Amino acid sequence: MRIVKDLCHSWLSEEAPARRLAVVRILVGLYATVFVAIRTFHWLDVARLPVRRFDPVGVLGGLGGPLSPSTVAGLSGMALLTAVAFTLGWRFRWVAPVFASLLLVLTTHGNSWGQILHTENLLVLHVIILAFSPADVAFAVGRRQPSDDTPRHDYGWALRIMTLVVVIAYVIAGLAKLRNGGFDWLTGDVLRNQVAHDNLRKILLGDIYSPVGAWLVQFAWLFPPMAIASVLVELGAPVALLGDRWKKAWAGAAWAFHVGVLAFMAILFPYPISGIAFVSMLPVERLADRVIGWRNRAGSDRPVQENR
Amino acid sequence: MQKWVRWALGAAIVVLAAAPVVRSPADDSFPLSTYPMFSLARPQETTVSSAAGFDAAGTRLRLSPRVVGGTGEVIQAAGTVGQAIGAGTTDDLCREVLAEAPDDVVAVEIVTETYDVIAYFDGDEEPLERIVHSRCES
Image (cartoon, rainbow over all chains, first blue to last red; front, side, top):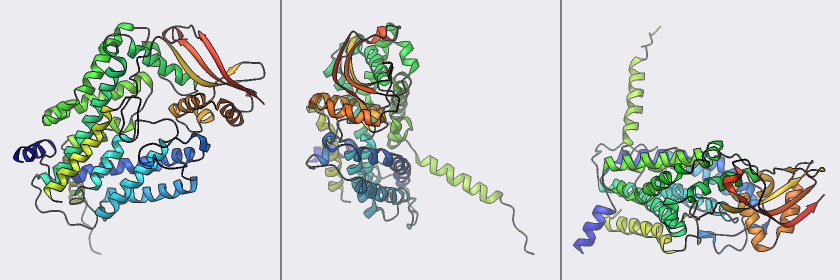
């Protein structure tokens, strides 16, 4: 029993201040609010597709038919309102699970039309984790700031689980490459062909492609080192569990990996590229300290008005 | 939240997130994914399925992802064409694409083309093989 307890304590949790968890809530919430506002147009587009294209996945796997456009519009509106409340921390214990459920349903419905995108998974999982955490103890509308900001497992466990989910996603992606492509993925022309194929598909389907990637496919020698680096970043993700320096180093490498994907294939993974996917690994409460510092300086610099 | 509840919740999420690793990469889902993107061992000669538009002179015109798949996502457009080929509904898709296409498009073909993808970007843009699944005209 003690071994299980120690394992849970060291692997499923870490100490963090309440303010860090709150800033993560605000950053993920801000991203999610903008995401819902923009993505609603896509969700409405797919809801208008012919019913025969509906191929439900995940929690909607048992759904007999797609949601109507008016239902999607209603759910999107509710998602937007609850996303704002989630970000502000307002009535978080009630609002956050509702927002997480709405986001799960809307993104799953959007991915239930014959093609699963992989740009939304981590956002949805992070919102679900935050929804069941005490992320409203600090910087929440309608609540007092805690007087004690000692790092505690009460606040750190959710951050640890968010990090673990990121690590697992990258490891699975790396393993998929080795399982599907074998070691040829690392040493051969698989990545080069992949970049060429993806850009050609974009051209044939009338989308924006990467001229950089299209030009670079002529240099075969470039691709094996890049393939090895890509798989190293993915399979090496568990180093982010080793400590603060490792977390920062891996988050930087993963971010660079996504910049490379964008440059070579014109594929944007906005959640990691924005850095929000990695905020659970970083001491982001310092952002709040800076904002408070600026606000205090601005307040003290304001000229005192004379009474007339 | 009690310590044990939090550990149980955390462990459940971690197990669920890791569970796709035992599935085939092709058995994808959402949000618990096998992340199969970019993992296929694509050869240099590879096939691309798409919808091609033609004007009255027979010149091929590019159709946007919105015209082909009904959304702005290129991967959705590719999935739509692949789904139609798999389900044998390319005639329906062809008519839907033609209805959404710009006025100068008088014919649409749902095609699977084989290219040497490296040679394509070296100037050799002709497909090695071309299969027309459906053709429809206005």
